[in-house]
Image (cartoon, rainbow, N blue to C red; front, side, top):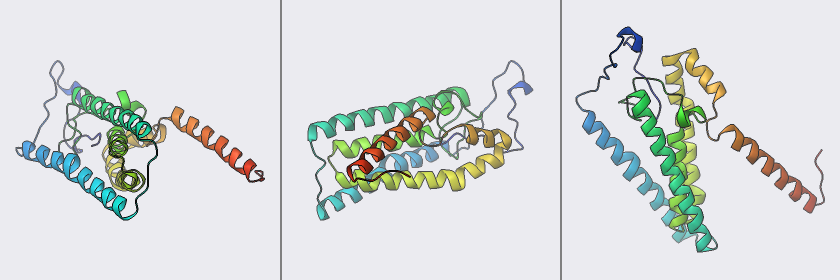
Length: 213
């Protein structure tokens, strides 16, 4: 679920053969890799996280509040998450000539579309869709525990492994991309969220009779 490129030593320059599309080399086991990827990320992982949430719901039942509101928010998150994932995957296929699978990486480094605003839009869309599914299923702990677990998991993987590999592969090109492109939220939304949290904190401190230093 990432934007990758072929290892160094292989020809990545489109200009090397003018007028001809670059041939993307795929291993003979491509179909098997895709099937394993689909099974793990689209079946086993969400099933495990949802089952964990359902078990906690039975042990420590907590209401999500109004079912109608939960459903509305759930559909909004699920649809927006899937649209973000679909857009990002199509962009990798059309511009990068590859798939969002580490073993079948795109031949070109993609920084357009959603990748212009987020370094890992597929991960973000996946998390949003999962949170939406938790709301639609009215599972408090799938939302409050499993979703943060998923979020922390992919952030740790991206920061401590994936991006180190990509910096080693792309050098300054990807290092500059990290410095200029947010990980989780677009800069506009980050500033908006920070402003909202600032207002909430001010109101909370005022209600408690406290003041910021």
